[in-house]
Image (cartoon, rainbow, N blue to C red; front, side, top):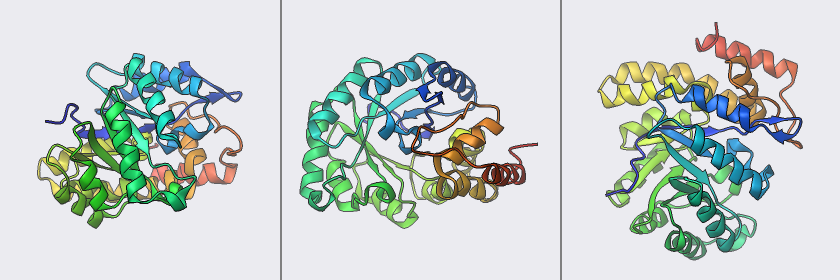
Length: 297
């Protein structure tokens, strides 16, 4: 039995900055509002959290804030993947001490040419062996240029402390193959909202979705409708959300996601340099996309 129920929608939350410093109070405010939307919990330091720009102390302080602010029963997953196995174990256990329920571990990628299946298997197994909390694999090939294959996922799924995967590659067919191949207690979560409807119909248990930062209720509704067998209603809502998802991921990235949050009454703020904020032109395009999707009046 999976020690943590991962069924549901998790946003990979953004990290708010004011004057270049992490604004923990703004983070707490955002979470207080997200708590009321039906989300299952939060992922701190997915790609949208600008985790590669944070110091270790900032990461720990963010996790502490998220744990303290999350609603009762909500799960907190900390992105603890570092380039070395040792560093990943250290950060994972530090986040565990602060109350994180699970860790999301991205594939190491700097020495990508040597990150073959044997190296990845050893990395994830060593982290899982020494982690005080269960771990999830984070497969995000567009950033890492590393892919965790269905076969490797199936092998890792047999480890009692590796409980799931966030697969952000968006290939519904591969997600279906994963669902078939993994241990029955292992959870497959889709990492891009563009594939949410398709992935859920093939047995994914939920998603870790950038879109859930700005449209949490819609993401939760898509999953509910699929579970209730209301496929046409789920499909229609998925189609309405697709342009928003494309805008806050592929087209405008983290700066666009933060601009959309500002427009919807959350705190987005500026990204941390060297990322530049969304331009005025981009903001007006994002506003139109949000209006069309009926997220903004």
